[in-house]
Image (cartoon, rainbow, N blue to C red; front, side, top):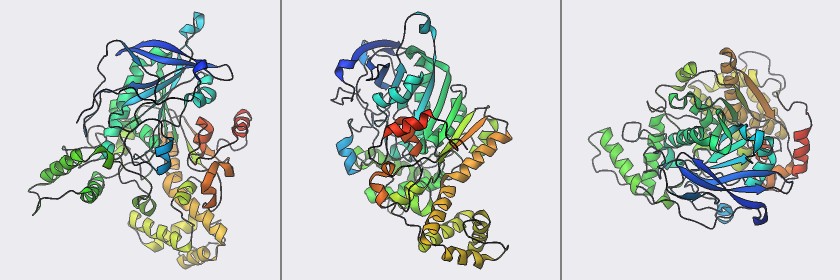
Length: 511
């Protein structure tokens, strides 16, 4: 399944026409026409929207390099978004349509200057958007905010779309459909950036790969693939990394999930079954190839797997190609890549709010049972471990082996204390422990590593979720509000406070 080249659309951007002028640059595939934009503060930056970094993809096929074009390609419109199931508000707020023809990137750069400054090469931030491998786009990262917060500091930003959900991560666990198509898209975008970023004033030898949540895990995973070797210099990992147990899934689990969902979409398996597993794989993939694009979108919301098991149903897998072997083994062979890693003070608080969890006794017990199942151990041993790790919060747990004492301590906690314990427990499962593992791994191999905890918070940050969250605090995506001037919870923020935070040294900003 292939697609025609992207047509012009009325996907305007917020920059005023009076502050814009056209600018042309040449990349290896041809000429690009972008926009030179001057902000209200007088800073001028260049941006190119919707640059094709690969040819329109075939469904469940690796991306192919973009072929050269004739003439000047206009790059002043927001590109097609990847296909996912939109929430109702996104249908009204989104400016660009969804399409399988979605392999486009955006480049935001300081103004190219004449004279001695013309020889200056800027560092590049290659950013992978979040969304649990299932949702989201780059639209929230606008030219105005990127110019204000990052490009004005002499940084080039590259954002891009990659295939999501089934289109990006369906896997049969064999050669029929190995999976990881979304990761191959990311790799192709990174290769394009390394090859062409000098045309925008960027330094191809000074590329930092970065991302948030699943985007952070993807950036970390990219760094371990031999296919990405030598085309980036460092990484910034926010709100997730490859150590997170949700970052990579077993191909058999992804296969089973895809089969269950295929049945819901109308897949009729062969009566009597298939002669071989390969035949079953062929039938499954052929079915998904015929599903209309509008019905194949995925969402993180209402997905029972996420809150019940703290994992993502569609995710990267060990395929023998992008990842020739398991991730721990690949880490051992990685060249030294300096890193920054971190997240929110209460990292899982956002998910507690989204899934309307309250940290009740019943919910705490469900987590304990889930841990026992995942760790293949007894509930009693999980309780003992909880007692040691959360001794201070459980107020007096002292004696080894006294598991009942842990239960009593949990039951005796006041509601607010129990809710905080619950959020801390989920946060540790979701990302804190993985961050600790990441840091230890870097230290063990003598690789520079910087860690942060984002603790700043405001009720405004939470929008309507402040009415359902047990308490407020720095959480998953709070750091993005500060970095990109965008709020995932759709509330207006007084960014003057954020600017002051940015300008003054703060205690505990980096932990």
